[in-house]
Image (cartoon, rainbow, N blue to C red; front, side, top):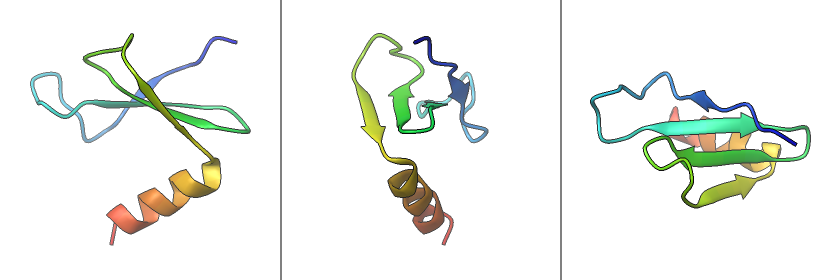
Length: 57
């Protein structure tokens, strides 16, 4: 399966914090856009939604 990565709207091309996310029905994949072949964090959609909710508080 090929993942379709999307860069965070809060990331910039010249900034140090660039996050990309790819979703499937079962998992959310997160990686550093400046290191696409590096490690990835994989979590459930429920955990991702909780993370987003908590960071928006």
